[in-house]
Length: 217
Ligand SMILES: Nc1ncnc2c1ncn2[C@@H]1O[C@H](COP(=O)(O)OP(=O)(O)OP(=O)(O)O)[C@@H](O)[C@H]1O
Ligand SMILES: O=P(O)(O)OC[C@H]1O[C@H](OP(=O)(O)OP(=O)(O)O)[C@H](O)[C@@H]1O
Image (tube, rainbow, N blue to C red; front, side):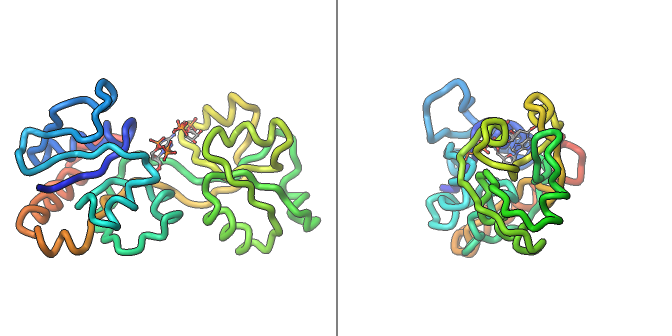
């Protein structure tokens, strides 16, 4: 059995064309089902539905052979034991620093102020501000980061931005770009060795689909 770990929502949706290129069709829609193990048209392939940030853990420990995870998630996880052969060019967005509209971020940085930063991406926030020589207190959140500057929890957030619609709706502005994000295929290294005959053709099919334009944003 080959087990592929995916998260519900955009990763699942945007991985469907890749799976199709490898001849794999899920038997059910995870949005419509409460099942966490989903069969496919292939007896030897199944999908497991996990939180986006848990995908690297399932693959690292070999509970899944393959997975799809955002670069944001992979950097926070550390990527230990994971082979990352393909940038799938899906779920594209940017990791950014954002503040309330009108907050003088550049001034605060110039004056050497100690900034409170709310984020789910603690590791990347620490690295970003350390590299700039800015002192920060990082406050860990699990979602809705955009709220933090509005209620005085933080001076700035580090969060993902795609259309910019969420920032705009909350009167926030992006003030710094940290990195571009897309999702990658992650593979358990031991599984690749043991099941190479079945996994390698999947990697080849996925790789072919990326270049073909079969996969949208
Ligand atoms: N607005 C967006 N546009 C495009 N890609 C995004 C966007 N937001 C997140 N992503 C990417 O998609 C991945 C999955 O996002 P998703 O919203 O499904 O999970 P999550 O809510 O961030 O994770 P978790 O459930 O573990 O808290 C993220 O890790 C990121 O790489
Ligand atoms: O720039 P935009 O196009 O508005 O996208 C940005 C939003 O997308 C992500 O949230 P998501 O939609 O994944 O919600 P979640 O964090 O609650 O899963 C991210 O955390 C931002 O809030």
